[in-house]
Image (cartoon, rainbow, N blue to C red):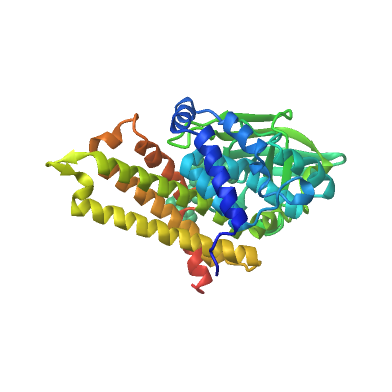
Length: 380
Ligand SMILES: Cc1cc2nc3c(=O)[nH]c(=O)nc-3n(C[C@H](O)[C@H](O)[C@H](O)COP(=O)(O)OP(=O)(O)OC[C@H]3O[C@@H](n4cnc5c(N)ncnc54)[C@H](O)[C@@H]3O)c2cc1C
């Protein structure tokens, strides 16, 4: 494994850092968080600089970045603005991935270039009120009609559905087949008659909206299927390692940013006549935090390396995802601890990490489910 950055990767990272420093100052992050609003301006700048096309093949208007390229990008973006990195993953990466691997030529040609230019946003809707970890037991039903599909059901926890032009909707198309075999992925315009979105209030990641979706007699065209009918679960499984790398990259970037804030705070806060960074207990905490973040980063880079080699790595990607998410939550807890009462104030940024970090242990599979995946790969 060679984790040395190429000159192109180094230059790209420098350019991204400069863009984020200019377009995404901490005041902007705070403003989007407080107003619970989509960072439209930042995404326009990222689009103009070509960053939205990173996970999209060159043939369809993107720059065809590797998994490692995307990892470096998300780590950097999350270091500045974690919610923006989560939004990037949800509105761009999942769709780019699904369309590239399973979309028809017509879908790729009509959607991917617009996605790369920032003209389209997607959401992904798998979870339902009755199916979360056991996602394949979903019950939203799509029935084939002469000229299309009729959809009825209810979805839960759909991120970015308020800002999405399309939702990648997972629905059951065969009730007789084993649960994993009767699911299809659809392209749903959320403005279609019969679709109702309700925004949910939540703890953190405020700029990324979260929704419940009601589907009552929704009619969509026949060609709204992505991939094969009844084979939608394969769309989800095929790129799981890649997607876990993306989520881990967000965790690592955000955890490092948490630690950096703790370092600068403890370097200026004085108690008992000295900087609190001078206390050995503080030093030990900071050292442990950096060690864990570096370990998470190495797990992540190993998994990205394997993905780019085309080597399936469910165990390694699940380890990267699990360890990075728990590392981030611990970093946020320690950051709060190191700031005493000040960390509890909304005017400091640590509370945002404290609130935002928790989703890392839920969203891409809970810690329990990821441990089950790892143990399964160990033959347990
Ligand atoms: C902010 C946010 C954004 C989200 N965005 C999206 C999105 O865009 N699209 C989407 O489809 N979904 C999304 N989700 C849903 C997310 O994927 C689910 O919340 C997650 O998969 C867990 O499902 P659940 O919440 O129903 O919990 P449950 O599955 O009900 O789990 C509850 C508890 O039981 C444990 N548990 C479950 N099964 C087992 C087992 N076999 N062994 C041991 N313990 C077990 C879990 O680990 C957990 O601790 C989002 C969720 C949140 C909170």
